[in-house]
Length: 337
Image (cartoon, rainbow, N blue to C red; front, side, top):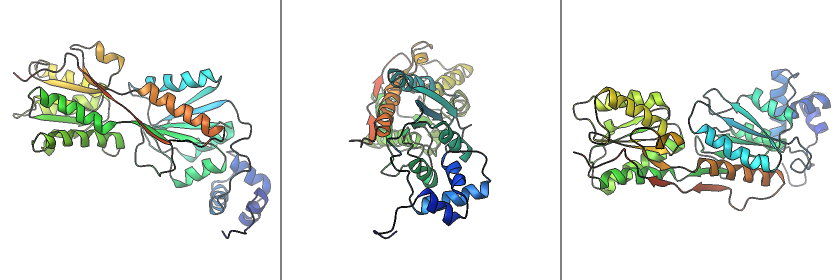
């Protein structure tokens, strides 16, 4: 729009879309009683004019924080929930927990429910919103922060993650320092940013040590037990099996350990295993798991504090944060025999 163009209003949007003012209001508030075609038309006009409600960030909203996961069937989800709840409880806020059924992007119906609840903001975990959905959140004055982004985010999207590349590097360097040379990796989904970053760290450590990267030793699982077990059986059943495996999550490491037991391989005598996350289970399985400690609770708490600052209308000094990780050495790694 030209610099001197008048600011769009609900009335002007209604006139341009050929609908009533109450209809535009219903769309903005996530009401379900609007035909899909009408909703899409109104949203298109809202986006074209970059409409944002006056004082949207400062207006009164319900005392709810939305926390949405792409899926909840993950051992680390509880750590994220606790981190968000810790900050929210201190501010006497409620937390609405949602799951996207494995998808990394919410459906329109989910966004409409958020708008209808009048929530003060959203924390996305391994999820993302497209440009149109970002515009919808902005126009309603609903800030959001992404934890562990599924993919690259625009520069203006606040994100909190961990140093995934450094974690992959540290895990692989540890195995190399013990004398392992045939090292496999089982990471998460290949379309997830943190998964790829951990594999990149693994590659860098091998290249640093002058060891050629063997593509057959790089596997992409699902960050869950099944992925570690299934890929573990394939890797460890091969004639030229690896002597060590870096699993991209503790749960995949647990699945891998089961595969090793079924193949009668001893850990760490026949196989060294490194996990990722340092979930409580890592200390209790046998042998105790060497892993990369990821500060999941603090990542979630940091994201929630950022969200509350945005809801107050503040500008974030550092909208992109990657928290440090740490190698924790336990009993699942040893020099190869």
